[in-house]
Length: 492
Image (cartoon, rainbow, N blue to C red; front, side, top):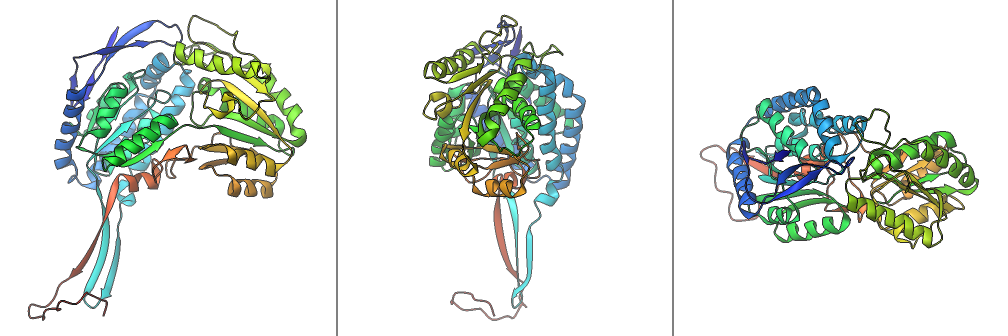
């Protein structure tokens, strides 16, 4: 039985209430995690504030070297991190390794932080006057992250924040805390000073205290839309900078001219990978015109072929859901949709390869758009099929949905793809790519109810979020230069 404690100011800190940890594949209790309360939140924020006093003045070159060292340690400990993810989340080991690789790409971007922080300079903007600008860190930044990507999503945040000269307090999900503890160890081994990166474990109460703490200057959040809206409203009311990513209902539009076998392969992977517990999972297929029946047949064949089992089993394609509550909620959506007239093409409710929180792939056709299964984020291995007469109707359907995180179109027509990518009100678009998560040198973020705040995470927008600009105008006059008077300065 493990006990996961906070990492504050370079030291393990425990005490207080705890919450149980479970293996989703067996349901068995595996350990406990300490829950942070007001005193712990204050200690973490103050440790980060003290560290910021010196870290902000550390050279960009040294910060970059620490990121290079951290990146190498992430690669060396990839298997260790993957095992921790699988033990607490349940996803298969290959999927866990994949999220580490995608997170490591952000660290690689942070290794080039001197280039990303380059300012601007204008010579002789007025007679004897030069102007330039540069960016400076904000101070203490907080990250509040969900259970579904214990390594990747935090890595979207803290490497950029720290490389920019900020300090960081991470609150991981209390369901999957172990990977964050190892990340803290790797930062220390890479040479990061104590207090620059802190891990504060806890629940909703902990998160609320963190986003309200006066020492916290910026908050990054990923979670459900109601929670993201609350975090944005609460933190901005306190004068903090906020990027809050919410829920999703990602649609894949399949045109009749698409390679249907390729589309079915890609959509199956995107819908059922990680048991559908991804904010970029495809959860709705919009089958256009005559593609519908042959596409549904292909999707059904592939869903039935998915092997469900423990994430540690090399033969498993898909692991369990995170908890018994999640299993009940997702199954309830399938039950309700079936009762309302949706056709269950593939029913995964009876696929229980073990005592854990397992649910096999579910494929539902003829789903009405007013059903909760469509209007709400299910966050499970459930794929819905809607039908549209043409591309215009498909675009209208996607745009009518309140979420705007990611979408994809499968087609062999460049004209149709270009029209779709320009017309949809969605932040990330894939063309024959089902999960269009941008590389680290771009930025990740959705539209509409999928994002609260002005900036996306990581990449160039991440640098802008974790810094603020300063503009300087200089003149070096001769000693006997007369006063310029009291008039407002203008260019001469």
